[in-house]
Image 1 (tube, one colour):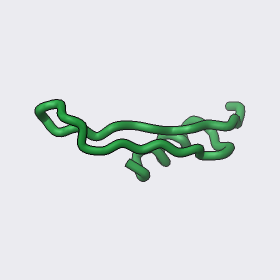
Image 2 (cartoon, helix red, strand yellow):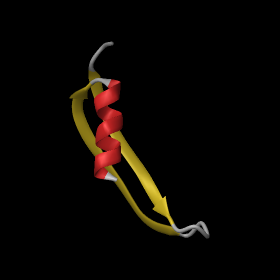
Image 3 (tube, one colour):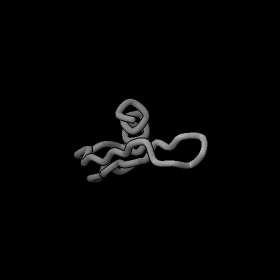
Image 4 (spheres, helix red, strand yellow):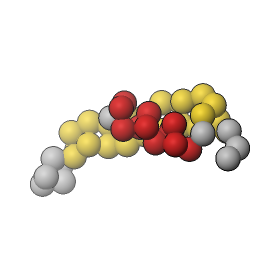
Length: 43
């Protein structure tokens, strides 16, 4: 797989759909598996 620059982000909502919090960040240069791991850890 090719390394590339990436950003991650997401939102956390209550079970009723109301927004609780969100996040976004630039991760630098990682492969897709490292990006997914980082998204889970940062959320």
